[in-house]
Image (cartoon, rainbow over all chains, first blue to last red):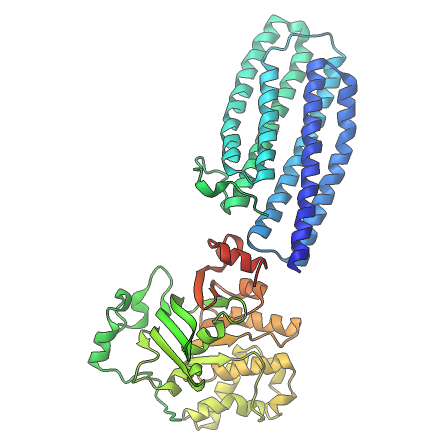
Length: 230
Length: 290
């Protein structure tokens, strides 16, 4: 019975990791589509999202099945609950990538405008946070998850500063108003990606330590935090 | 065996009181509720308590408090000492030759293995329900009335009250009220087990010990018993030994995990089953070993 559950948990892990790879690649693709003004990349990303949605449903069904059939406890229970939540966050990141792709398509149809804020830095930080949170998930690495939680404040700060930069850019180049609004939207989507990465990181901490750390600002790192749990 | 109507467990002397004070710093001579910690009071305390079968130490220096009017589950692999521990509380182990104990086991602050203990009274106050339903081959009424009669209740009206009250408490009254004179063995397995619980309740115990009470029952009867445990919680202290981990998780407030006679972990059931502190516990409850 347990061997069976362990095998199924391994399968679930594989499913989640394949979803992780799809979501990460799609986000990188849409960021590149904005940077390179590349419409076909953006359209490709929109198309990829269908596969992400299907994978998300499959993971959820698998989690529900394991909960119903095995009634897991302790680490097994925490693993499945964490996977359910991570699955949800990944799907949302997938949707945000689609939103960014749609903005990229709009921007591509407009005359090139100067980007009024450090888009590359914002994109780099958000995608790095996502990657780190997923690495933390793959390796049950709490210190890395804690880093991700802390990095979220930086992305929030960039997002806040960006509003002012966009306002002054609109005054300076009123002819690019539409493009700026789309870019503003892209930045907000990236900020949301960082929020989901933070959620994933918090779920990793829950998975390893069994403690819910949302709304708790400081999570100390412990010696025994790193280790494969399942 | 000597039975007496008195519910006094112990013929207490001043010297006994003196001895009881000082064990783990709790004054056991006071009324039971005086040692309240938070909302819990200890009903049974084991202090370095060991049980031996000849030379084999089946339970090894266990120290724990079982909380009054809560449900405590004892889990652990076969042979870990859970039934032995349970049976020690009402001295059922006395019937096994070569069985002896060291350390202290206190019930309401009185040493269960003390010289002055009256085992019959102890067993009246600490009722027990076994794995297989074991009604007497008598009528339903007589099964329930057996204990009270033995302890001196003679009036038919009083007995009828006790029988009704106990059967109601065991959620069996509605099903059997029209056939109290029928043989108890004509009931289904689940009903028989509830009858045994009613029989245990009829002598108004403080503690109910349950040794795998549902392992011989089907899921529906099991669910009846589990609901019943939920109903009795708050009124009785219930200690249940079970192999069914989900059952321990469902019915108990606290869980004790024993392994090879040692107490590995004891704590809130909800915490123990979501985030156990010991690796051993985690491995056992997730089925990695045992």
